[in-house]
Image: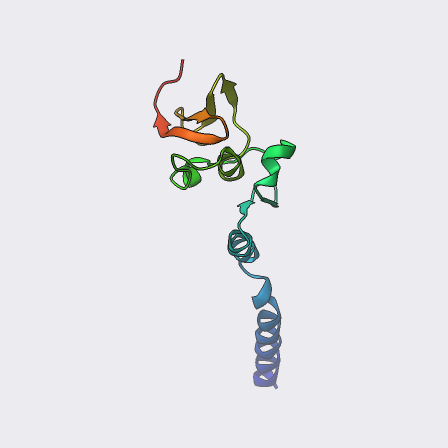
Length: 128
């Protein structure tokens, strides 16, 4: 009798786990799907950014823009930087500045020439 209960509970737990498997790692799957379509996933706001967020000024803030900084290269469109790094914290003339990350005091500085990134420094220790 006890063996049947243990078997029944084990079977029920196994079936429940089987039904839950597609929902595990949903955020990671969403990120891969978003990047496959040419976007960037903002997991803190559960949204997907595309280059069009630059024109609409709704790219939002990133929790850790340093994770994507290496993907923004010299000559890439400014819209690409906004999509990957989020809205800059400061815009000073032709320079865009983002906080490096939540716990770091450094910043990311990009110099813009028209609609292209002229240069980008992925970590500046002190910013006046």
